[in-house]
Image (tube, rainbow, N blue to C red; front, side, top):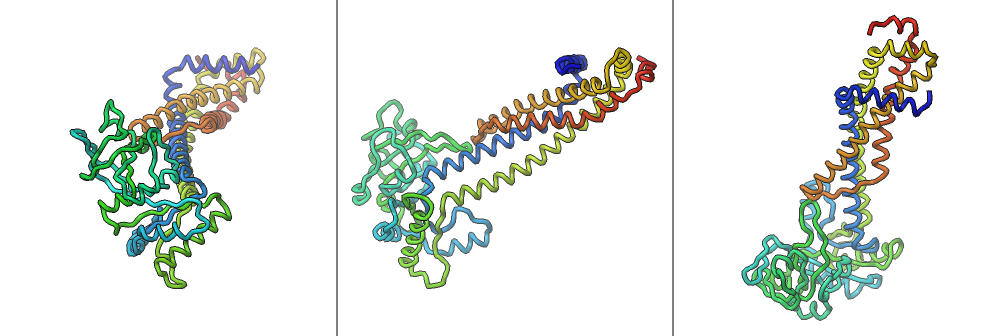
Length: 408
């Protein structure tokens, strides 16, 4: 029997028993859709985190009071007891670091921003030193960024996100216009490129002001985060990190042999940690989805055994007309494989749709990878063929005389 004929017979059999086929495919569809949805969301999260941290560059590291990743409440309490990283620490490192190509600092708070009768609540106010937009690869779409003079003179100027432009300056050019953040007036000098939303939260609802102006409003006692650009990754990054660590320990009078009273975080370390967590999450979810596929495979095997019993006389006639055992086996293997492949196809569609729904509802990023689609289809087909072997073998080994005696 040619493969083309076996496929034709398999499709005819599936079409003749549509309801049974659909019910049989549910397990495979659930398993494949789970795999695709999880992989799509994990890939999206990995892409987002990698892009977010990579926007600073592989040669950028941060100095802060607490690490970006805290694994326990005991660690959090211990880090909270540290002295704040102050603006003076930033200026000391800025003025003395020989391996630093660029250095900046920032603070942030949440405030209400107004202009005339328009207002935006829960707006993030970012206090930037003049190099920070460059270190964050924050592109200015309109106007200009901060200058060193803006920092020195604590100028009341601001860079805004697109949400602020759309809500406070509808239909007019915001450049040169005035807004108020917590009652303090700032003149808009630039509008940043749109960044979109992530996890349901807009990335464009912010106002950036010079850090010196920020501290005049909110005080100088709060901790800042220092960003340092080394120029390149590898040994140069290590040298810059070591130099900054020595400078910080000296400025903060950390005792010899005592642990650092601050934290140095490298972006690659954070990306690697998140990727590891995402991989573990994907592995666990994939194992659960694989169990669903196994259940679906068992259902396929049961339905194929029923099909063999129902078609015993048909098998006998085929054998009497000259069909070989391998022809019968091929027919039933192709039928179980086609059934599983069909379930895998619909499972892929459902999985992608579920991931997109999650993205639309809560903003969780999703990225469809071709390899995940191929893996899902391959797993479904493999499960169908594996669990179809026994029914196919049973059909192939039926005695044609006994089969012909079977009642219709």
